Picture 1 (cartoon, rainbow, N blue to C red):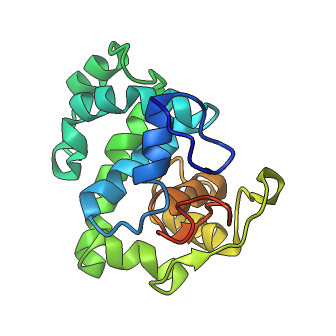
Picture 2 (picture 1 turned 180 degrees about the vertical axis):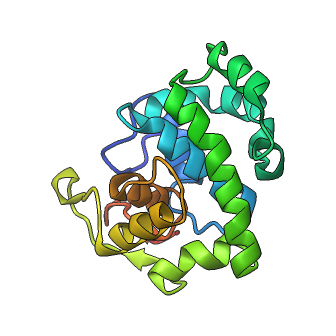
Length: 189
């Protein structure tokens, strides 16, 4: 049951969305595997609603070996065919193919920087950008940081990592605090 706390305007009455907003969104995240999960899920969201992806999140975890980049990086055509038949995920050929490519590139970044966390947080100087949003109109879809992140990820060969996807990743992983100022989570994260 959804409680009546003052929240950001975007969570719907879907309990899963509210739980995500209240417990995950905007919390600074430094675990490489979770950062990878959000990178994949944000890419899967392209052209869809976050609610759609969140409703399929457990299916994604099962289908993609709990987002283990080492396993996903070794996926073969057999895995690709299996995923294309999985109605629990978004069955878009390019998005599915990008997951294996992104896992391979993710592992390269880990090797180069010591962790993906160290690399990805460098775009915000290892700090959360705390915005001062008052209404839904104040939300932005990109930022100079997400532009730089997208450009660098693309240069490294990542797929489905445009600036809007990168900004959503930044919001989800607490690189930016986009809770509205009147939301109960604004000062908590």
